[in-house]
Image (cartoon, rainbow, N blue to C red):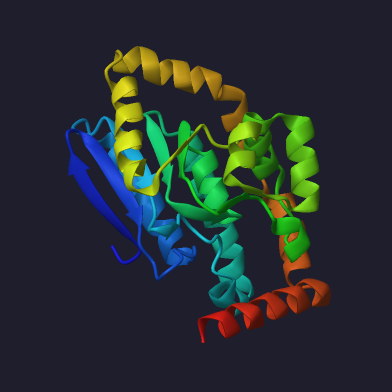
Length: 255
């Protein structure tokens, strides 16, 4: 595994996103995370999962620098795989807690939203979906995931303005469930997941599946038509210009 690390202790798998300084999401991370969750889902010796990042970053979202260079076939496959990862995560029956160790915009927020509970480090961090100002069309499945936790009206407003929330705002809105000191985040996540796995697993998992039934139907529906619209916009001159400007800014900051 090149983009994630996995540690298993007391029947809990801790998956740490581990790609560069900011854990930007590329095709390899999508593939490795999806396959790992499929494997864990079948492993009777693992009762639950914690997903975390690095100090300062859970995930900075999609790796726009790499994705910008993908050809038409590569970017089409990436979006198919990313939306499939969302389906894998939403349908994951075992308890899954996000230990959000820092900034978590865009794709990082999506990964956190798939979890059953979100704990975030205190600090000057942001989280939310800011795709629209970047020029990326948000598929309906992602909106459904956002509104599952925030409610449709709030998700609608936040998404159309590309709002990124500070930690206290995220807690007040229900986007995250708990704020803790950075050094306590894994302990807090373990404490939460232990509450879940101490319950009867069949009852807990079937209840989760029931509660997510409508959401899962929406995220796993055929999104071919939407993907075609997204890809057309991805290659539009306006979006390419926005992305190029963002990439130049990112490269200047890292140099």
